[in-house]
Length: 418
Ligand code: EPU
Image (tube, rainbow, N blue to C red):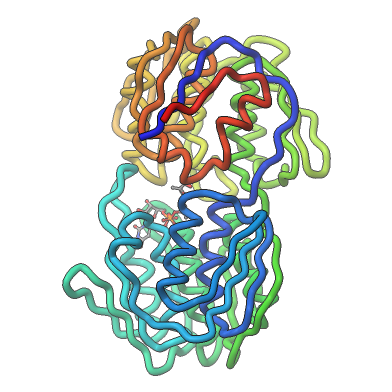
């Protein structure tokens, strides 16, 4: 198994080009199942999660190519049963459920299993599809959804943690081919949901209100092939911005959308970070010592849960006491014991991490447990004294394209060891 070895101490400087968004590309790839015609999708990051999704599409019968960040998919004839072996590797495979049901009237998909960032049920996805007229059963670890016809209606998709991103995606995709009008209330407003809606509209869907809490979908008879460019990955951009701040360097993230990170940027400014912003770039600097942070993760446009682990790493070496509360996935704190092994001072009280900034961290062998936790450990390694070994690096390869070479180009001492 590969590991990353990071030698801390270098200030990062330079420019880094942000890849396409993983969390946009995954549902968009699933949406190609809605048409027998060819779809061409640009700016797709080369990540293991993307490769899992392409394998699922191939298994279902689609012809797929992937070259130079462009994917073509032609799902002329498809079957409706997904393989457990592929699905179990990636929770996001659940987003083929809506498209398969809408296109074939049937979908059989393995129930996603446990997840290290906490309980991740799919009850709201299933409830939403049932309200549209599907009969949903679970049998032998599989979800079976059948519908001779889906009918548009009002669907409330809230969870006790707020809206659901992939749940909104699934119901929105299914509703594109339903009879009549579907109104999704308490819809997720994340930029990735909006990107998917724009992709679907290019295919001939009639979706309005995407990017707001209420999405209206007027069903159409069929969808057609389309060409689309995936939005940039806001979480990758935010992670490199933290790499700049934690090393007190000066990094410009390019080919990104500053508006997607407004909340994060404002929070970092309140700690003393300074940003110069252009239409598709941001330069991050730290003119003086940063101060502590008090933040709660929320659905968009709130502070993203996918930046929580990286911010914990930054606050571990920022003077003062930071209070970070996780409201989306209350157990998403697997990075804390590992950061503590590097000398961080953190107490966890319920879903709140109380971090007392220390002057420095020391390198240690650490274990990556999930995607963002691994990013946090790499960030901590960039400032720790000595060589930090981040093991189980396959987690990071799920969501960060060529992270080692991108960081090296910014001046980091980082190598991948087989
Ligand atoms: N929830 C339910 N029932 C459901 C669905 C969700 O109770 O049927 C709860 C979840 O347990 C959670 C909350 O609702 O407490 C929000 O979960 P959501 O459904 O929005 O998460 P997701 O759609 O499964 C996506 C991203 C995650 C990101 C979350 C939150 C993709 C592929 N994944 O997951 O990304 O953290 O939204 O923004 O888009 C990552 O990239 O590292 C990652 C985990």
